[in-house]
Image 1 (tube, helix red, strand yellow):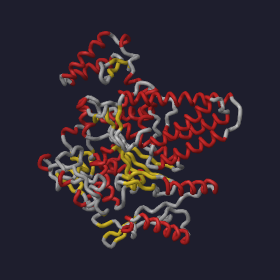
Image 2 (cartoon, rainbow, N blue to C red; image 1 turned 135 degrees about the horizontal axis):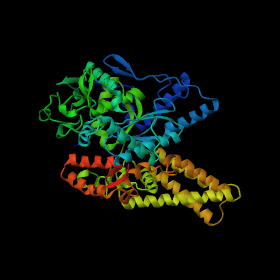
Image 3 (cartoon, rainbow, N blue to C red; image 1 turned 120 degrees about the horizontal axis):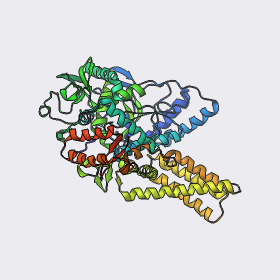
Image 4 (cartoon, rainbow, N blue to C red; image 1 turned 180 degrees about the horizontal axis):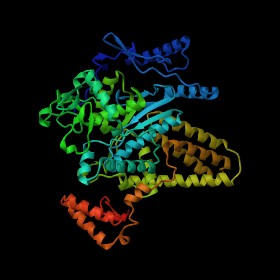
Amino acid sequence: PRIRPAPPRTLGGHHECVWPWAPMASSKHSLLLLAAVVCLITRVSGFGSASIGRPMGYSSPLVTGGRRLSHNRLLPRRPLPPLARSTRATLRMSLAEEVIFYNTLTRDKQPFVPIKDGKVSMYTCGPTVYDFAHIGNFRAFLTYDLIKRWLLYCGFDVDHVCNLTDVDDKIIQRMKRDNISLKDLTNQFADAFLGDLAMLNIVPASKYPRATDHIDDMVDMIQGLVDKGHAYESKGSYYFDVESFPNYGDLARLDFDNMKDGAGEGGGITDPEAEGIEKKGARDFALWKSYKEDDGEVFWETSLGKGRPGWHIECSAMSKRFLGNSIDIHAGGVDLTFPHHENEIAQSECFCGCKMSNVWMHNGFVNIDNEKMSKSLGNFLTIRDVLKTPEDCRAFRYMVIASSYRQSLNFTPEVLQGSRNTIKRLDKWRAKLTEISKGGKGELSEDVQKAADKCLEQFGVAMKDDLNTPRACAALFTFVKQTEKSASKGDMTAGDAKRALEVLEKLDTVIGVFYDVPMEGATDDQSGDDEGGEAPADLVALLDERAEAKANKDWARADEIRDTCKAAGFVIKDVKGGDSILVKA
């Protein structure tokens, strides 16, 4: 589809007039002058160190049809000890001016200023737990981790919520295929997901809410949208009326008039007649799906009727439940920009009457040998297909973290090997520094101190510029080379080594490659150490029969063989590109 420019921002059919000086936004000089004036006014008015243009306790109004709808008011801050208060205030003032993120909504880089001083609310889209996540998914999860680690490094408190989608069409299909209950299926892959996060040293979110635990929140939001005139019922299902929200499409900037048919799970552009449903418009998307026989045991009896939620309403409801009406950052893969995130904005802003998220961040795709990853091309790789050893886990993490998060990442065995070599070099140098720091003598030299200060400064400058990790990692390795040279000449003192170690450890709070890898997840599914001789020959012989049954789509026989092996104390593990194996249960 063609890209269209963003129209003027409106809300509920009226132009958003948060700032009366918005027409001046096109001039940088005007904005600078305005910022100076506002800063002077806030100081004179006694509003203290609150963010420019948003004094503490002030709530920007939305002018809508003669009524004033207020944003969430800022909560009073708890007093901090005098020293910490001064230090944090200085740090945050610097961050408000220097930390920059690219905002998909505005298509430009913007200074990041959180809604609440020193606090960041971040919502990220988690996996649909019906299968193992692929390496493209984990690029997104590692990007979330990078954002959060950087904000923590800068002194912010981060409240991060990452959802688990445990009800949708794919899950129902997998339940039927494997003859398994909703809870058993989703628990299995939710546990696998959390194990994979640990293997990649991803800092856990504050919460991992599941969609099925928040059906009531979704029902309340859907009913609220109906009451406000933004949703309607049709044959027991409920749909969002896209025409009621003039801002629809601002995030993706798509030319809807020239888009073809093709909505999947409750969103996008569809032909209502072709789908056999009654919608007011092709762009309308499902909020609640009435029960069908194919849904089996997956349904809820609610005030909306018997059925289940659509995909998009889940995130809107859970974001509101745990983080409030407006949040600082919403992140996801670029593939979620439309329709998922576009639909989230529509639902949330029409229900709450305020902006859902100030910043939208999206990471690029992962390609395999310069081709799009897809099951049809046979190049679909799960994280467990790729990560066979602890070194693989750390190398994969570095490979993703060191790339420009908004650009496509090309995955090849050679690229992963290059990252392995980088990790080995860092490990070797870290061990050498530890040895020197314990056995040598001498104070910190001026040269190493200057090199350390310069490294930290350049790393910070790079990271503040929309997480420019290629430049940040270049700063790290410039420092590594300088200190390696000092050591090779015999000039490095114990003080120098200690300072170098401090720099490595500090930067690793963001990069996150120095850790012991828990390999339970990968070895359970990938390792062949427990296969072969330990399994009875008659069970091993069944593997070929099962492969043939699957090729013939005889799922009943394949499941029967699986159950037979399980009853004998062995589990069949499918290996990408190879034969299935038997491992002890």
